[in-house]
Amino acid sequence: MSGIKLTERFTEMKKSILSPSIVTKAHTSLVTKESFSDADVGVSIYKTGNERASIGDWHEALMAWQNALSIFKDSLGDKHVYVARTLNKIGVAYYMLDEPYYAYEALERALALQQEILSPGDEMITRTLRNMNALLSEAREDTESTDAESDLEDEGMQSRESCLPISIIELELNQKRKDLH
Image (cartoon, rainbow, N blue to C red; front, side, top):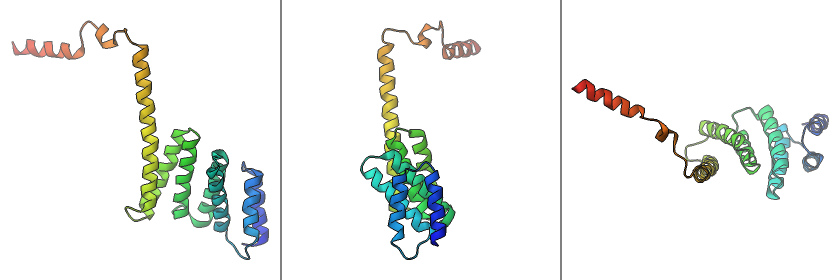
């Protein structure tokens, strides 16, 4: 990639929602190389996202990975292992930012792509499945705890079904008995 194209790419990134520190770090890591591609820019930003995640800065990590994903798609196409890996990272970031819907959506896209381009049983597929399982397990626990809280709040209250004079099932049974006689 020429120095002019690189400068244009980093100018675009500075205008985006990425923090200046991510852009500067990615740019600094690339200027030491003699020759590099758009994918190299994406990898540099991806690694910066990993660094931000390692210190718990999930918002910055998410922004870096989203930008890396865009670069990977532009330079490598939609069906590349870097795209799949980055989608998994984005899912994890959303999970850590307590955005389960977006987390599941990203993980689901990652898994679909991984199943298309990787061998069955590949470690990356396993990792994405574990991430999805963790997300769904937490959602299940949240639902169960909400149900338990609801049960406590409604203690002593009759259920809606018990307030009805006769249930639909009982009506159907009574009708069948009449038909038999």
